[in-house]
Every structure is written in structure tokens, then in C-alpha cells.
Image 1 (cartoon, rainbow, N blue to C red):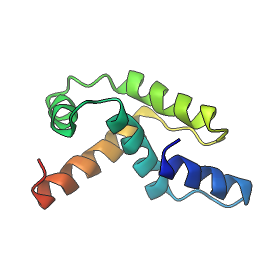
Image 2: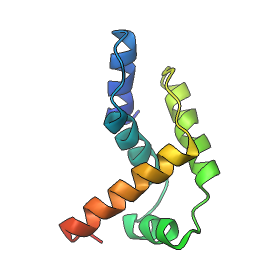
Image 3: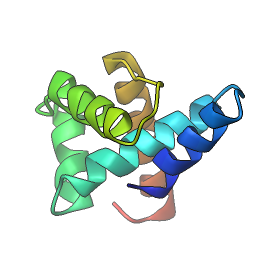
Length: 94
């Protein structure tokens, strides 16, 4: 289980609201785990060739497997990936 998903579970177990930034980070971390290279993921996302519904399903399965009640939507995945690509580009990693 990735670190961010375990943090979501901690928030849920404390009956606390889960911060959207944590949800987005968990989503991106889960998606990145499924890709061999970050650059390939970024290129697929930016070109519109990334299957967002499939990635959303994958993230939601990971959340469910960890025992989380939180789920994400495709627009949340798109926003999370957009923020990630922008941040990595600014850092010079892409």
C-alpha cells in the first residue's frame, strides 16, 4: 500500500475529513506505480492518450483494497495528473 493511501485510511479511521491534496497525491502515486517511466505517463496524459476511466478504476481498487471508503472520480484524476505534470515540469524533471 502506498504511503498516501495509508494516510487516507488514517484520516478515515479518525473520522476526519480527508484533504483533497492527499487524495490527489495518492491517485498520482498509484497511477505512477503502474507505469514504467514517469515521462511516458506524462506524455500519455498530455497527448490525451491516457485512459482516464481505467486509471480511475485502478486507483479506486487500490483504495478499496486498503480498506478506504474514499473514492476518486475521473475529473479528480485529471486534475491530480495536471498538477503533477505542472509541478514536475517546473522542477525540470520532465
